[in-house]
Amino acid sequence: MSSEKKQQEKSRLHSRNKNRERYDLSALISANPELKTYVKPNKFGDDSVDFSDPQAVKLLNKAILNHYYGIESWDFPDENLCPPIPGRADYIHHIADLLGGSNFGRIPLGDKITCLDIGAGASCIYPIIGVTEYQWKFIGTDINAESIASAKSIIKANLALKDKVECKLQKRPKNIFRGILAKEDKVDLTICNPPFHASPEEAEKGTRRKIKNLSGATVKTPELNFAGISNELICEGGEIQFLEDMIRESKLRPNSCFWFSTLVSKKSNIKKVAKILEEMKAVQVKTIPMGTGNKSSRIVAWTFLSTEEQKEWRETRWKS
Picture 1 (cartoon, rainbow, N blue to C red):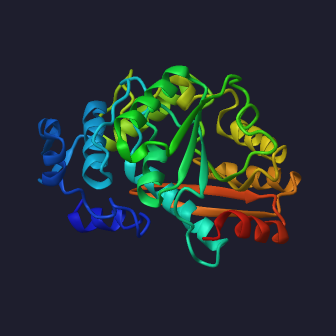
Picture 2: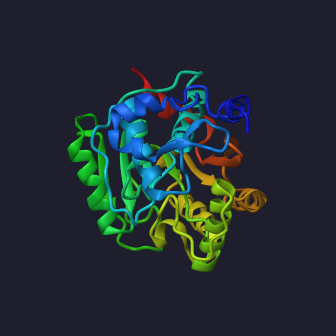
Picture 3: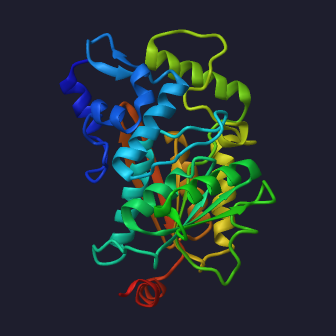
């Protein structure tokens, strides 16, 4: 693949994405010298990182967060999901545009905006990007106490995140908003990267396919290149069941959030999600396409607020 082709792929990222251009590996190695060991010429003769190696991916992400986002301390257990930063940043930028579209084209900034991250995980990645890019406040939830502890450690270690991110343990794993959002609570956005596999076997099959795409190698027992403990990748019923549960629970808190949203990994689930949202009588539904490299995804966002309720929300929460 030529450098020109790679650049075309990267350009699918959001225009405000800090990683839209090719990685400046010299700058990233300066930010995290450990990365140097994992930078080698690829089959095209260009210096690159082996994306099939979990340790290389984690060190690359540490360097990206340090160099581009000013996060100097970012660590978590190796068994937890190591998120690809450009794709996570794209979600935040697109959802910021969605918010701006409801505010006469102006993206609301600062701590008057609160975003609820369902399944924030040990890496705390969405809050990190949302805080550093838009200065929003975040509530990060997770069903795993160790992941919550890890996220809290990251927040404590970085001054930029202080008093900006609150972590909440979801004590009932089958619940999503219940136990987190009380009826009187208000958040401006919710985001989620749901588990997309229905079984360990399905997760392993997906990982084998990903490794083959990244390195050309075929492996019988793959090591996840972005790691991930089971609750981060697998749930009963897979992605569509999780999405249905989320939408039905959001209906129980129709006035607690302006825009609910989630990633939808599988294109085949879009029609099913639309049908559930219609059944739940969502007032507005938006589907936002995203693309990183040769991977396509989409965000689905919905609101139960009427036009008048949206106006009141803007005037009471977003006006400077």
